[in-house]
Image (cartoon, rainbow, N blue to C red):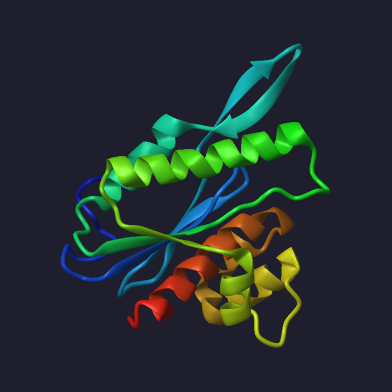
Length: 174
């Protein structure tokens, strides 16, 4: 976990956050240095007789609270929408995660912009399909030193958070 003493960048350096919401999503931080990426903090909760993975609001708040020392931070969060192919329960859980990220950003007064998947993918995935593996490939292309954090198929949330942040950085002209 990052600390409030930001080693990620200087307090005045522009910093862009990219958030791929959901329990398998991630938070990416871009500043003048190498990018930093964190998986969404999660907890196991009992739902009926089974345990389910859900986003941990306290962990999410701790991650974003560390960014408060970065005065020029701006977050870009993927604007999620209902997908007819997903079940009602999973969409509710996904929407809950999206709402948690937005609420924590607002409570901590971190300015943020919602961006549709179509918009950031159009800007970041030119010449590629919009598949999850393509997101990992593009992120490794842009940040070859991040290979270890992006090499697994399940690291697509990290890759998409990085690409959302880079899209945001370009939108802000940084």
